[in-house]
Image (cartoon, rainbow, N blue to C red):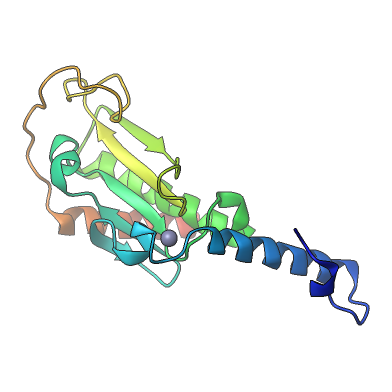
Length: 178
Ligand SMILES: [Zn+2]
C-alpha cells in the first residue's frame, strides 16, 4: 500500500507526486527479492563478453552452452523486475543490446534461427535470452526448455573474442544509426 504520509507534504506538483509513487513502487519491487536471493545479483550468469555501467552480455556455459553454442544473455545490472520499470532510455539500451547480440550471433555462429526470450519467473531480474538454434539441435523446433527431441549435434565452438568483437561492432552501428 502506498501511504500518503510518504508523499511530499509541501505541495509537490503532480509530476513530483507521480515520480515519488513510481520510486516507491520500484523500491517495493526491489525489496520483494533481496540481492542475497537473486543469482543474477550474486553472479555474472556466464562469461562476460561485454558490459557497461548499466548492462552486461554474458555467454552461457554448461550443458546449455554446449548444446546451443553461442547462447548469450543480456542482463540488466540492477535488480529490476520488469522492462516497464526501466526508463525509456534504459529500455532502448536493453533492446539495442539484444539486437546487437542477435546480429553478432548470426554473423559468427551462423544458426538456422535465433530465439529471443524473456521470462524471469524463476529469477525476476530483467534478462533476455538470445539463443542460436539449428534444425538438428536437441530441441528444434521446440523451445530449449521443452523436452529434448534428439541428442545434441556437436558443433564447433566460436571463441568468445570473436563474438565479443561482433557484439561491440553491431552495437556501435546500431547506436550510430547505421
Ligand atoms: Zn537480481
